[in-house]
Length: 204
Image (cartoon, rainbow, N blue to C red; front, side, top):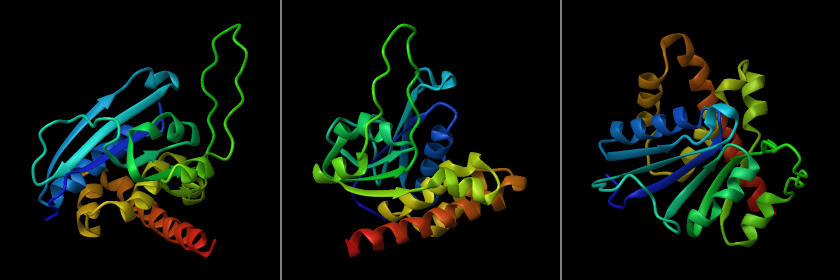
């Protein structure tokens, strides 16, 4: 059993399944015999706005919220969300993000700001380790774009101390039988993509 409390911040846009992903992570921690707390900030999630969930797990967890500077892993379902919440990361923290850009909702009459480029390199320059995977494309290739969140969970599984057995139990608990095989394959594909991304990064 891992002694340290692990802090994971999960950020995305409404409709991307970020909250389902955070529930699955919490279930995996419980399946591993750990305590887990989850707190959600819905915001304007149903309108395509930013949505974030705090997940903390370990031998003992007292508060459901993570303080700025204490996040071990940032899960970002698109690039801008990685930037938006990077200040929560601890020094040397890790980011796993989908290589996807979703332009924010624009207010009428307000000039559109350019979407930031080179997000992953910017974060690496700040001292964070970054894994970028094409989660939405992988999900489409698997037959259902809605499982992109689980592809990203699979990629993130390299960064948190939870066994594959715990993750598989969580998938069984969170998804109905008719969707279980799809999400198991999505999780496995995320793990594969993260391994591939890490190897490319190490090779320079």
